Amino acid sequence: MTGQILNLYHIEPLSLVNGPGKRSVVWVQGCTLNCPGCFNPQTHPALASKDWPVDRLVKLILERKNEIEGITISGGEPLQQIKPLIELVRKVKDQSGLSILVFSGFTWDEIQRIPGVHLLLKQLYVLIAGRYLASKRLASGLIGSSNKTIHFLTERYKMADLILVPGAEVLLNPNGEIVLSGIDPLRW
Image (cartoon, rainbow, N blue to C red; front, top):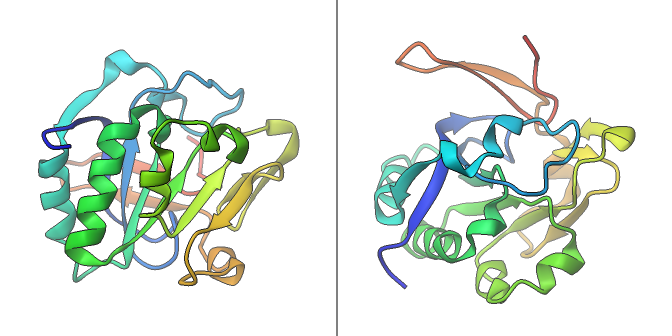
């Protein structure tokens, strides 16, 4: 499995609100779940994507491996790009030992039915699963709504680690772009 392309919305090299510790964040582009009230509706249309070779993304992440604890992958819906996602997380983990956290709108049961998903899950440290439900909004401990489930796939993290993550941040990128991020993102 080489030469995969991942459709991306945005890459944030350094964040403090998308998982435990300092993390690089990858937001994929494209989601057919369209949860009402989603924090990132701009990531839903697949046509708005930026195609990135996985190897290029791995290189970018590894350039920061001494500054970050791990990577977080969100979206859009990462599991709708399962093959390039598997390649990305496998290469990052093999070449760095960075922790990997993935947000998915699919439920744990739906995830179990995705062909090849076991290849992904064995690379992850934490998977947060379930559609965002605005009526059950929580916005705490990396959980957007109370129906979501957290799956600790290694012993590296516990719930206490997620609870300590700040709710929001404002980032100013070198190109002047302002990014509002976090489980309880600020709104304009």
